[in-house]
Image (cartoon, rainbow, N blue to C red; front, side, top):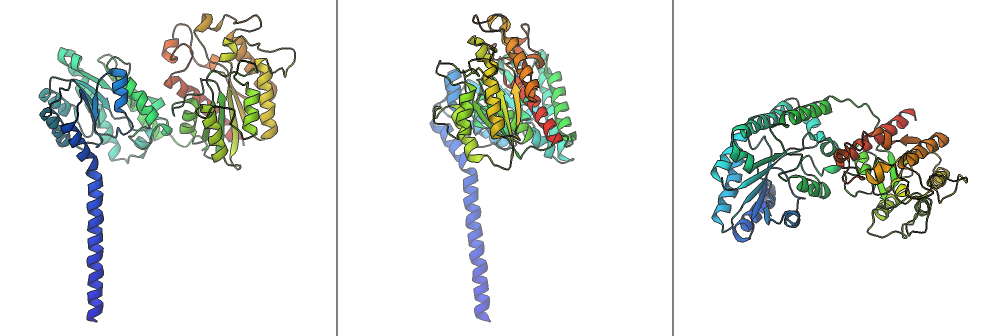
Length: 478
């Protein structure tokens, strides 16, 4: 009996020792980023700091060095409270570095507007660039009924308390810039942009790093903050009240072929946003500079691209290209049982190069329409049950806003858009006419396009929403 008791006690003690050891190890790992930060603050050279109360893992110091010529020290530790944040600044002041700019990631439920003002009063010889936390809409949807109003109120209180202070303070206007992406639907509405509720992926971190600068449109001002806050509250409230109006498309494979309008590699691309909105498995097989028509200029037309796709062979494309990545992703991860959908977006480069819209031969692959018709037939033969969506080219400000033909046989940009509509009617395909449905014209194109041709993130999200609606409508009828 005594032996059994001793044995039992031994097991209990051993389990406790192991448990304590695991606890100590986990605690050590938890605070390892903090220890790294404190060592770097004390030993490295820097001219700026980027401290944050939400994860900024995927921001890079190289972006600040390359684009802004400042040398920041970015915290690896997600700072949990004001006491720790103040300690970071104290340690910076004890180093030999002269810090001129502070980038500060702020969760308003951790750092209030008064906390920020106290911090700035204490360290008042620096310029502050504050980025308010921008959790995904999924985060807001999942908050319980007690948490939601408290977290939301922390945002509204922060903004409503801080921004009016600009009115009577030239110093604040010169030394504090606040950026808020919480009402930016292309960001928070696309789940593919996030690794978790607060941590965006590397591509999106790079984008936001570029946008969080003192002269950009995402900056809160006396003139815009009330409208931005109203849009934010509406967006978040709507996301919580929305019922499951649309069928889930998690059992769909959606493959995108197209030119550089499609080929953005970030999750804010049109394929990325479609996946983030619908839950579909999306594959981005876009290639910058490509066109539908078959020519001898070194880029394959869409019929040859489809041939390579159907042959499950991407070897004719550069291994570092988006089209290669998209095809190989599909070959490795698509499932036979999933509903297949193909989205084709061509026409901008067909117009720029002056390729004919059509010829007498409806299958003449040197023409825009003939090449698209041939590609569609190939896809339908291989995937008779697939959904096919054709997109028209969007507006461009180039060449007289798309009104100047680029060769003796080429048409105007609206001619290429009209040809897509006609082909969809002929073949019974879904059509998204981005040329006519997007409200872009010669007077406002800088609001929608990055460079007179390529859609910005917000416009790509709107285009993705339109495609999602087409897919949902088709899913509803199946």
